Length: 278
Length: 333
Image (cartoon, rainbow over all chains, first blue to last red):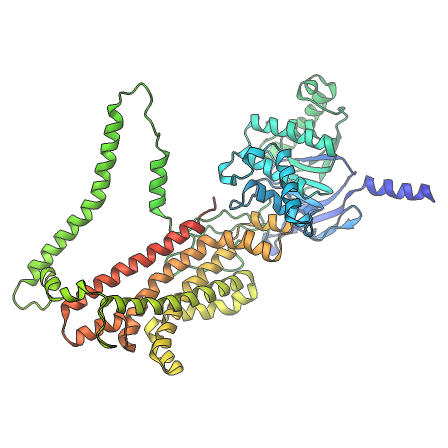
């Protein structure tokens, strides 16, 4: 009996995020667009998975389906055994365009998530909880500033703090560092790995940066070009953790995986531009 | 992000007759629509100016000789002096031409000097009170302002409420928008006989005319503001479960505030336009009736003085709403 329970548990953890047979169509009639054509993907609990592909290949569509912001036309998306049919705090999103509410301070933006998680706790507790996450992304000094006063990197850190403050089971990152300059992006990636090492959330990240994907992920999912995108290839990243940028450069896997990814992206881009080699 | 539909980039709430986008095209409804945040029409030019001044370097680089600071200061002073002197000069010129025109024989319109001379009593004593039919200009303006305040406040409350309803509900929009589009084109005074017949009294009728004049721009701008809440903010609200009053106060109201204030600002001007006309017909104490009464007793100079006051009060009202708007409405990016 115990063994079967254990198996069931293991089974559920192995398919913590379970996307099966998902098609997504937008619009109708002539303007109908077939974005995803049969996507199957399983993400285990505590796994960091990146999805990489050319612009317009439907990566963000896939993420929005897991977030519950959109629903699949056919097929199912389930998280922790429950079918996704609406957005929820168990699936926090870090948006591409940071999407902070500009009339709230940094602290208030983070507290928005905390207030939703703990509607019954007192004000003091919620404030301290929000402050904890602001400190986590090293923005303690800027807690009372409003987003327009922050730099791009700082804004995205607030977005990350807000997502963690929701205490989600799955963290969904939609090209979180896409709008940042290369230096800021590097330090943000370092920060994200160090936060992730501490709590090992299940992460699904959309990116078009090959190095970012290799540095952060356990597995990398390559998507074919849209319309009617499918998963073209899944690449394991067997580089031991914790990873550092310097160690990465000497890792034999790293160069191999990087080459494989770039090769695929360039090969698949005969009718699209390459934005991968960042 | 995948764009399901593209939002047509509107011009923001237009002055006077803002266009209402079709609900299919409007930003707020489809949650995946990537909509850029349109800028509100009326930007506060004053604020922009001050900001530009503030962004200038406070001190010139150390190598530069100190006189440059004086020169800059002098230039600023000159600029400020021009801001005051030019309108005064323009006014003096207009006054001069007016005086020359009026001094010709056969012209009924009194010149500025004669106006001031004839109506000095009115200008110098705004608060005299010789019974209900003979009050100073201050009292006349005050009672007009009171009517505007009541009618406008009602319009603001009802307008924002209805704007939110039709901005949020596609059904309500479809049902009510065509009706509103017809009603808003009816001239304010056309409502007066209807409201006199309904209320049987002058004062509520005048207030109703103010209400019915002021309410449309508020409804229309509010609904546009609600429909154009950026998809990003809607997504944040959905993912982080901002519902009910938290959604209302943290997402909807701040996001639509610039539009709402644009509506409020258009409306205050229209309300003030309407009150003067309405009072001419309803009588009693009020600047509108005072002007009409002066006309009937051929006191041209009194009319001119009143008209100046009407203009100045109208400007003041507009500036007050603009000031409130700059405090609340333009906190966005």
